[in-house]
Amino acid sequence: MGEFYIVNPLIERYLNDLFPVRDKVLKEMEELAERRGFPIIGPVVGRFLYQLVMVSRARRIFEMGSGFGYSAYWFAKALGDGGVVVCTELSEENVYLAREFFRKGGVEKKIRLYTGDAIEVLDGLNEEFDIIFNDIDKEYYPLVVDRAYNKLKHGGLFISDNVLWSGRILNESDSSPATRGIREFTKILLSHKGFITSVVPIRDGISLSIKV
Image (cartoon, rainbow, N blue to C red):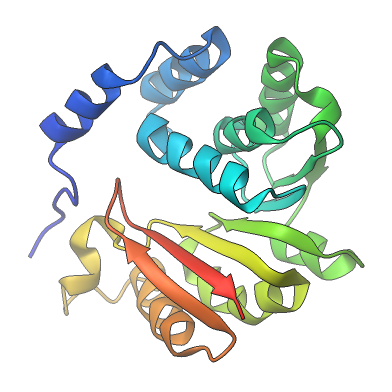
């Protein structure tokens, strides 16, 4: 069994075309991602995250694996004055690009950007968050669940990307570290007594967990 689309690309394109025109910075990021073949959440998931910030009235967000800032930009745009997105990214080049995009979009004051390993940064912070967004290398996903629980406020949201992994989770012969990580992560998360979790089948699958 090979990879397949969770959402028909024609449906996703249809939804994208229905949305109002996005600002120039988002469009620039999307074009850069397409040129580089760099994975981003895309506008459908971006709007979903934006809504989650609005309905939860989040003020403090921790992002694990920020790339060049696409999802963080959506988060920052949704935050009110005084809100902050703590970003983490290993690539110095991506950190540089992210800073430039945040500056262009006028959201740099809502951003704290760390160059380094997301798990190490989270472990080193004595802070609580309203939302933790997880998009690190998939083999490390199982290590995040308890850490996220411990750093979230009661009622906080733990969101993870790529949990349906282009259908590779269904391929029993796929024993790659990333696929095994996604499978283990999903089992841990759905059985965790401290979270109520749903999996939303948009884009490549988003898990949405509420700390109880």
